[in-house]
Length: 132
Image (cartoon, rainbow, N blue to C red; front, side, top):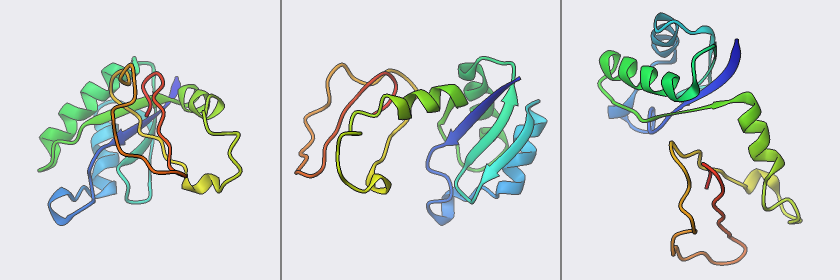
């Protein structure tokens, strides 16, 4: 069994996108996944499965759309993939507060180049693999 993290986008950010975590755990377990745990009220789910992460994302997207009034996009990464994101962090040389760093895990590949987004120092933006 592989440990996976499923991230449901945009849930519990407003009244219309409410997904109770107990219900989410039930939906994920009913979809056949094991060791299901949620983190806070975030829509982030830890689970185990032998399925490919892309298949888990599709299954959970469909299960959530059937169970809840919201249809969140679902991004799934293995524990090892998340560790690799941290190991390849492009801003490690910065002497700033790491709690101010953010990563967006994309469902597909990041763009070949970072979009022209106005970024003012000390802000910065980098794209690599399936992360921004």
